[in-house]
Image (cartoon, rainbow over all chains, first blue to last red):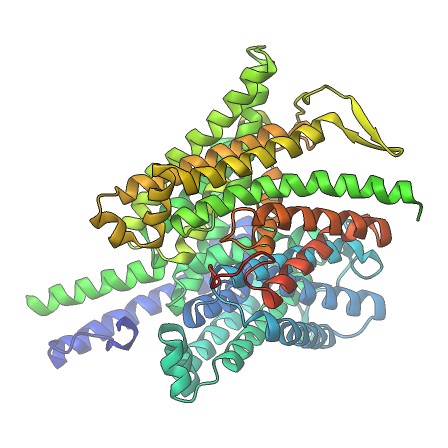
Length: 335
Length: 295
């Protein structure tokens, strides 16, 4: 089983192991430095794009988690993303409540809906489950449009206040950039810790051998529902952040296409690796922009990239990188 | 609620139901032959309708040729999809999810391609019998809708005969039920899968040709058609050849009655809620008897 393999081949001598590890930390440090200084020289639109990558990382993490650890294809993330955004929008503009109230209400509603819907739906599996979540996404999209007393319908809700951290107003992409990425990094870290916990092992056991997991005392259904709720909470969180960032929300942002984007993010990044989610989020925000210089054909090219990624990188960017690293290490061990 | 109104909406529901049934039929054909849920079935219809429109409009051929052109275009697309994209994915060990995503990706590519080449305009094909309608007890139905119902029923019957009475149809079923067993008695399994996609494409192209006099051809039409078709196929049961019709008609009728009694905006909400409920309560579909397939 691949996921139970140790990090590095055991044939590696200790000194080499250390050098590999140092080099890895070096790469991490360089990436961190690049991240920290990026707003200093990159243009506003690039930073804006990176903020969206951060938001999508958070929401996509929920989808990747379901897909990679439980084998559940979820196309319903746009619904929870929307609930988070609309809760924030409604509470801050209509009632004038402070921002944390919007976050809390969005998270609570999302969790409640995920629990109520997930309980029956997660008895399904495979294609049925995927289609059930897609049906949820469509229901969400229609309700976001129809309940215009709550959501503003196609006109949307504007004038959502920017986040204010101890008197520091996050009103520019540069400032928001320094909020969204640390939040994303924290969530990624928590996610990694969860995967290494007892629950994480139970999840992988459930994914790879549901019957065996059940015999060992894992309540498969309950575990799936829990992960679904967790994923919905991440979606709502990202949605609330999104509402504060753009200060205008309308139904266009929470359609089925957004749900599909979140799923693609997870698949392209490689749902089984934690960093893959970041790579996937960067890809789905940067690639369309890069391709848009070719004119109107960029949507076709983007879809072509997706098809190529599904065929040639079945484990996503994360999986491909992991394999490349393994090959490098093996070569070093040999020389 | 007057009787006429009820009848009128029932007729509209019936027409929509057969549209869903045709799309669902294509999905069921591909699922039974390859165990793949084809998320681009609606795009077969889009390409079929578009091709028929082009033959009619640019080449000004008669309608029958245009229809044949549309069906052929759908079949061609299905054939190429399997040959160029599905086979390589299978060779690299594709899972259920990867096939779903692959077909979804192709659906995007086609939709974006149609947008790029033909723009946002909606196009209509002329129907069989033009714009004429038939009257039943004060309720009107387009002549074309009657043709649609007749042709889809015929196609369904032909497909049943194809799968139960012809050598190649039986081989296709064998290849899907037991790959190794089929291969050991000399059935070319990959070829059967390609033929399945060709057949699914033909049915999809036909759906496009028949649908486009009623629903406009538009680059975004594919995804919702796919979903409704899938709902129809699941409702009736994927393993039963007549399931798609039963499911499609049920879905269409419930939808149009819902529009009458609630509001037209909630049509899709009701259809999707039914889809979810049916999957949970009747996982084999309304006609299914055998063990459930697909999840």
